[in-house]
Image (tube, rainbow, N blue to C red; front, side):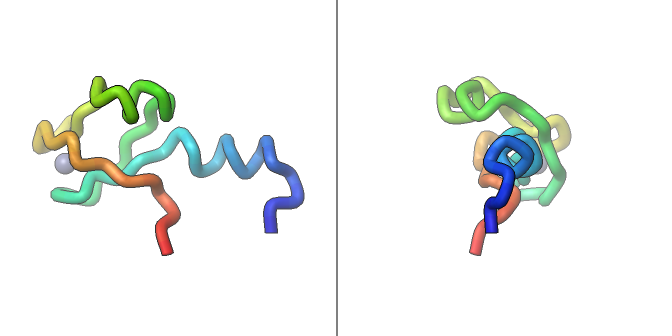
Length: 53
Ligand SMILES: [Zn+2]
């Protein structure tokens, strides 16, 4: 339940997980969507949001 939309957004929207090596990356969602963020470790651009069900 998103009781506090802002807190919820802060918690998940800026955190992405590399699909290849599972490392967490914190970046603005706009940058990620624009493809300007790549994984620190494996240089992959395959990122997903932290919470995915
Ligand atoms: Zn990676």
